[in-house]
Each structure stands twice: as C-alpha cells, then as structure tokens.
Length: 557
Image (cartoon, rainbow, N blue to C red; front, side, top):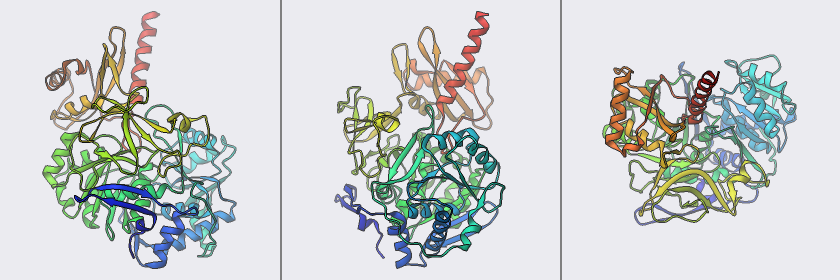
C-alpha cells in the first residue's frame, strides 16, 4: 500500500527536490486511530508498527494488526470504567510499549490524551489535574509513580479513576489485565477534526507549565516533520530519542512515521547510557534518527560512535539549538549533516533544514511551506533587513498543527494576536531565508545597554576544549542591570579553578565582541534540564536571585 500521507495531504516539490508547497486535506470526521493505524492493519496486517527493546534484553515487535486488537481491547476496557468522549486522561507510561496501544484507545474513544513525564511528583500531577480537569491517570507501576499519582488524587477532585500496568498497586486497576476480558472489536466513536485530541503541558523553561491543546488534524501536520525533515521512508525504521510524556514523542514516535508507512523504534531505558543507544541503532538497522543536542554531545564522547550510523540515512535535532562546533564534528566523523528543526509544543514543525535544502551549520533552516513564518518587530511588523525580532506565524487559529485557542483568556489566547501566533523566541533571517536562533525573549540579556544572546556566547565557549556544555544567563547588577554568567560543565581531564575561569573569559573576549564575555564563571557538575533535554535557564536565574537576596539580607542586618 502507498503511504497514507498521500490521502490526507497535497505536496508540490521544486526541481531540486525541495518541498515548495504543502497543505493538509483533513476530512471532517478524521481520526488517526481508525483512519491511519487501523487502515494499515486492514490492508497490511503483518506490517511492523513498533520495534521495542529495553536495557534488560527484552524485545517486542508489534504489527499493525496486533496494535489494532490491543487498542480495541483497551478502548473497551476504559469505556467499561466510564471513560468517555471528551474526558481528559493523563498517560505516564515512560517508554513502555503499552503507551502506543493506550493512546490509540483514547483516540478511538474520543477522550483527550494528556501525555506526561513519569518524573512528575505529587504537586506536579495535582497542578495539571486541577488546571484542566483530568479525570483519569494511566501510569507505569514502577518507581514512585503510583504513590505520587495516588497522593495527587487526594488534592484533585476531578481525578477519580486510576490505572496502572505490569504490576498491581492498591488503589489502581490493572489495565493490561482488565483488557484481557474485552473484545478485539470496537465500534467507531464519531469525532470531528476540530474536537480536542491531545493536550500537553509546556516544559516550564520559563515559568509554570502551560496547557496546550491540539485537535484531530494535528497528526497530519507532522507529515512534513517525518517525511521532509526526519527523512522517514516507507519500510524504514525511525528512532527519536524522547520520553512519551513530551511533545517530541508526537513529532517522532507515532503520527508522521506511520503516515509514512515506517516503523517506530523504541528504546526503553531509565538511565541514559550512550553506548547502549548506539548498540540499538546498529543492531536494529535504524534508517533515520532524531535526538536533542544533549544526546548528540554524549554520543560523540563514545569511541567509534560513527560505526552505529553506517546504515542511517538522515539525522535531525530539535528541542534547543545545537552548537555548530558539535555539528561539524559529527559530520566529520559520520558524513551525516545534522539537520536542525524548530517548533514548539504549541505547533508542528515551523522551520527546518528539509530534505534537498542545503544544511548550514548554525541555522535552523527555512520556513516550512506548511506555514507563513516571519520575523516581527515589537509592533508586529515584518522585519526584512536581517535584524533580530520575534518568530511569529500568520495563520488561522484552527490551522492544522497549531494549538487550539478556545477562550479570550489564558495562555493560548495571549499567544494569538490579530491572527498571528507569537512564539516568544527571538531570531534573525538572512537574505537566503535561513533563520538563525538568538534566544527566548526571557533569556535575552540586557547589559549596559547591549542586547546579548546567551546562545551566541555558548557557541563560543563550547569551542574551548575544556567545555563539555554550558548555559549562559544574566545576573542582576546595580551598575550594569545584568551581567553575563556562564555555568559550565567541564570535559574530563580539566579541573575547575580561577585560572581556567580567567582563560575562558579571555577566550570569549578574543572570539566575539568583548562586552559579551562572562564576568561570572561557575563550574557545575550538571545543568538543570527538562525531560526533553532543554536547559532550564530560569532555574539557574532563580538560584542566583535567591543567593543575591540572602546576601542582601545579611548585609542589611
């Protein structure tokens, strides 16, 4: 069978093979679970949907036919327990293969899936449940997940149904056991393409996590993500390094990949060991690979890492910008150019180095033909001279892949202004149409009248052999407003100290404008990050502000 993206979209390519135009053609009653996953099962029942393995040597290969049966049983089971269309159900299933048939079951019922990381604690779960009215949680029964969910249910009145998998736990129903009692068939529930489909909470890199809701068109927006950026191909095997609780799982572990008739590779682990990931890539013959910059940095520290990528045809990265120095090093070792992509939990892929497009280290690529993306000044006017401004999207609020805005208040409404979606990210665009990331609006450092991009300084610092990774933030200063601080994780073989700190400061001074150098250098063992690998600069800032406040109190007393 032909990949189903042909049925639900229209594409036009230039003579050089680059995507020139793309549009989603979504029927009113489209439902990914029935019209893609089940349709593949009907036409090619033995076709592989999922290849799963874990660190203990367990392996499971699931066909689309098996996936259809499992999701139907799960849907019948959840319906028996009262889960219905419109209910919000949180999934905390790590990288366990149960996630895939469970989320399909929710799509079939018409319930709203709310994927969440297993690392959430009681207060995090209760906050999310109370924020959007989550009625049920389906979670893994290992670690302290069930205890946190149970405790959260006492503080969230809407949270009345608790399910777990693989192991029993007091207060929970065993979903995988209960669904064995159910039928393999499930009567289709009618849904509309504008109905709520999936709801994520943002990472919280700047402030509290915010709810972001997408409709049933959302999976189709990821055709470009998988086909034209990640290089997913029919009959291939795609591996995206992402926890199922994060939006990146929707980008790289289910929707676009199956629309392209490819299988999804899942490596289930608790502690990341780069050597194990490389072995999985090599053993299962992964054909396309996507990971955040942090993973690439760790991979490149492994001896002969390039051997694992001999059969990989395309590699991509997203989540946060990747330093050009690391991209060059990876290309030199593997011959593969890491193609960067940009988007948010609130969107699908907005900007990328798509197939056929020249990969330029240090840029995010060009605007996806799916959206009208441009750089705007503070008044919302388009900037065309290469100056810095905010990345914005001119589109209808219901366009596929863009978050739903149903109210005139709240986060989604604040992001939409006069038919324009505001990302809150600063960038510039050159005369060839390539975007260059500068930073979050909240991360830009204003020091002594200068606007300083943290990412620009980080790009310089990682060129120094002592620096493994770093984060640049602004620290309040009475004279300058803010001064630049660099939090640095060292490579092995280097020792923290005043001498190295001075060397790094001078290194920045000689490789970029002197006013950008970090006046404060702190050596740290690790950087605070979200589950997706994004650096939480707001957490570093809060820590510094707390220290300064304590110092101020001591002085005043």
